[in-house]
Image 1 (cartoon, one colour):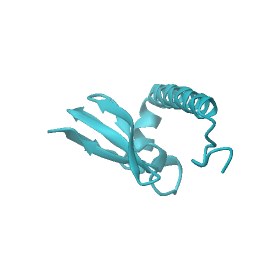
Image 2 (cartoon, rainbow, N blue to C red):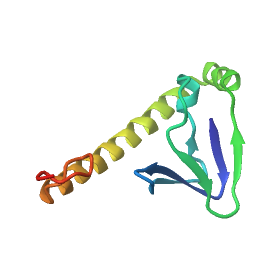
Image 3 (tube, rainbow, N blue to C red):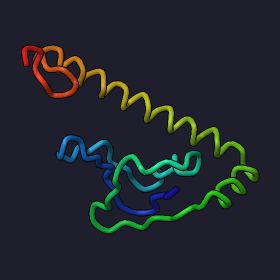
Image 4 (spheres, one colour):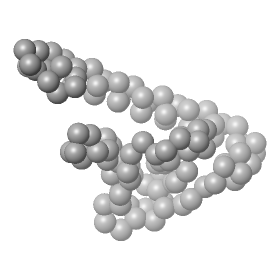
Length: 112
């Protein structure tokens, strides 16, 4: 997991050979937290926008800090929940746009 101490980073994902910006994270925010809970490949790429200072936290240190201050886990879950809500809203808007233009989610038109 990583915590942004200074600067900005952008979270991007390649979709159908196009790069889509999912989010911008600022000082005080974190990313890569899913790797602490799952042994899955990363879901997106994170790039610094200019100069940034990033703190790395491994699973052992993360668990030790949670043990010392359980409210950290609550705040982290709160932020993750907020991010899920934002991405769900974006997905719903995209699905509505596709329906309006009669495009199926796989990129093919209804009549193709």
